Image (cartoon, rainbow, N blue to C red; front, side, top):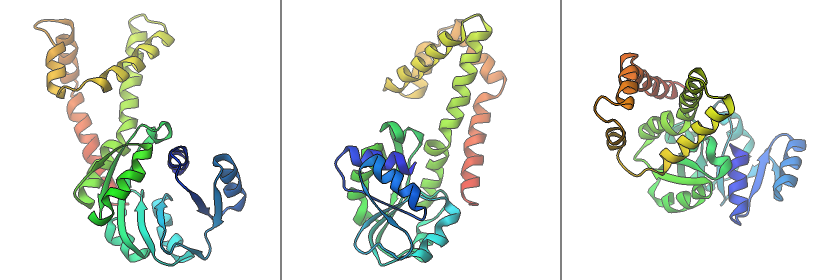
Length: 238
């Protein structure tokens, strides 16, 4: 995710410096993206906009290695609240963001929250990797994480199942996969409400109605609602 963010920022002409503890990896990334690098030990974040893109468990270690007070701290750490960030790292403004895997293609949907004083700048920065959506608070971004952060894996299961279904009824694997990918691209372009899309396709006693019946009979809708709830609950325990 860090590399995807760097790529998006650099492609849009922003000045970036990558910071970490492994100098060989830092050199590699600095060369790859044409940016500067610095080792984290004693690194001064004073007056800088910092994007914190480490594993959640590493927050305390990072806080012990850096010094100074950032202008804006933008954290993409799942489950780490604004209060915990404030306790660990000094900054004038704090922002939490949750991008997703599509950031590497500049197509992330990123949920953002935090201090209103840094809202516009944070949204401008994160728009370099896709669409941004401002949410009200910590709890809402944990909820959003279940959708924008984790649900791409759920959609992958759906896509795989649809493709397998195509193979089951007789399509070649490559054809089924191409049709499924096209389906997702087409669906993303639709502007109607979800219920309207379903109702627009589902005619009385039609083929789609038969398929919807099979999905409802298997409890697919409830299973996905439960998956979102479980993901949200897990994010509160990290």
